[in-house]
Image (cartoon, rainbow, N blue to C red; front, side, top):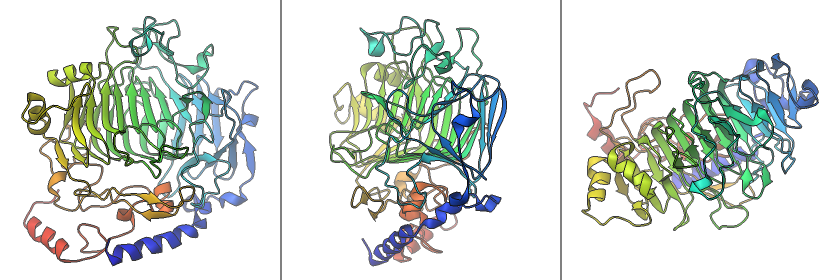
Length: 528
């Protein structure tokens, strides 16, 4: 590590220690200091069963709201959350863990701004950057339930049998969402077969931060940071951050909803997890696991992406088939553990132009996923796997060099395996683990002109995808788009967000001959 980078990191550590300015969340929108906002329990706005009224419920940034029970946005209800609003959530472990649930036909309008984000966090979080990222499971999470397609069927067996799927409700096409109790129709998602609404609209989540959730409901049963059950493509999900969740960061159970500019950090399970026939799109996703990799109570992370077609494989309903471009996921460093992409259960879909670092295996497929991969209905193309011990594995076996599978993976599909640290700086450490003192920062932005970030695979030409002819979530040599209010910015996780100046093309914190070489090599190239 060069001296300039050490100095930069020291300066950032000092800044984090005095990060009280986070209490001024929403000041750009005229919101008062968080500490001076009067507190209101959300239960006082709901009936005895936790249902908000049909019609409009408005949350303003003049008030600090407390999520003190499960709160439901009912069919016909609109929950409007003003930019700069903060919702603090009470810790209540077990089946009664507190969560905000937007039911089928309900809508949430959380349309924040980068200068005025909407933040959900624990009541214990002082919002000054000091609440450790290892604090997870302090409330439930945000759950959106819509009326688009899923492949839940009454005959489904969990993982192929012998036990019935926990999603079954008795009506084909209607599922019971993970993490919530059965017998309550407010916990259902989807519609009976033939009545699905692919353009269903559950509202807007924009510039929203979901922190320290994933409350433990029972053994191996937690709530995801953002859970989406059959959410339709009429819903807008952009610039959403999930930090320090005890389960998955983002999970899709069926549906058609898309997502753009998503951030996931310090969670204890997968970062992208999809299942039950999801057919949406994602572009620009950044995930950072860590800091602990000891296997103990503070251990973090699992797979970068866990991709399933159907949690009850074998029925004839359509399988998950999403399209994902431009992800960067930095896994924890624990040899023999994590996959960049875990593909299984009849999965289909397309993952392109993405970077995965610090992992034992790059693309890990079960036999049925590999069948779809060979048939071209499941695709992983133009991806770079940095430091992967086994870049490709099928049914527990790594294909030998020169095999048809290896040729398809590297040559036909244009995937690359590169050495640890050769494309992005993926080393990350916090000491002590129960603090937010970052002692080694990542830099997820590749250097300008980095060969392993180049691609020949173009983004689809449609109204959703942005042109991005590069691998990963960030343009090589460009800016880190992580929002200024994020926990990553609060604690200084990313060197790329703080280092660099005019001429620092590779953003290593110093202008030197390496930057000049990058400029010379790019001279006379066309800029887009």
